Image (cartoon, rainbow, N blue to C red; front, side, top):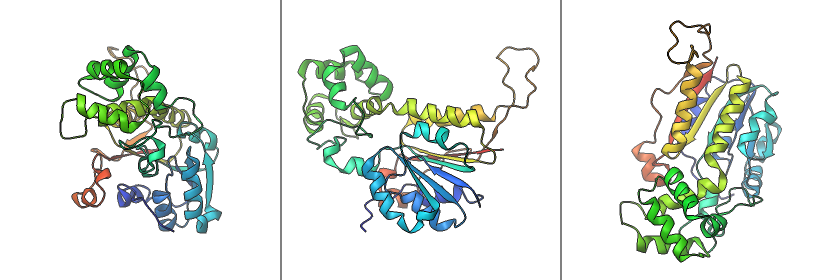
Length: 300
């Protein structure tokens, strides 16, 4: 079977779970099953819950991981719900690689790429909101919010304005070509950040990540490793802030003269003082890995 995807930070991710010798690891974003396959191969005593909201990804990884079928449970759904669903299992590890999968980027009909003839960007193809709705029906102020908050586009007002005044757009290719003519040229394609903003809006990516963390926090899983791979600063900030919050022993409000909470609220420790980033060799082999960051937390 042709494996079309190189998982980012592969060895580093496997090492994150080295101390686990029983129970379950949840792979929240299974995709092509690269990390899952590595974990099952390396750690013979662990079981995996492989989650994805994409039917194509589940079908592919189902075939790829067939030889481990007695140790794998597949689940279709958004990863914000997966921990809640399986919290009664003996969960010892949680992995989420929260970038757009190569499967989605490389298939032009999914509408993520600059050359795509559709304007879609849904990770879950059953969802009602797609990129076409955002681009062609959102008000100018709504588009400004999307480009400013999610795309971190410097010229967010200009981009929203020119889209509103020149729509409708029928494909990602048409939109990316239009933006490349109208926007300032830089190191990256002019449509990169606007597309990021639209994609995050369509899939509620930041809200989903926060809700995953909230569900983990509510359960406080014992001796559990949480490893998150993020691809841009907005996601990484959420990961960093939750991990920091989970280490806090004192949760008294600021300004309290003396601690009154008992000072024993720490849930565990951050394993990665700084995020793990790919080596130059990995970036050369797989340019898509260049912005990836891995952060790891261990619950007590």
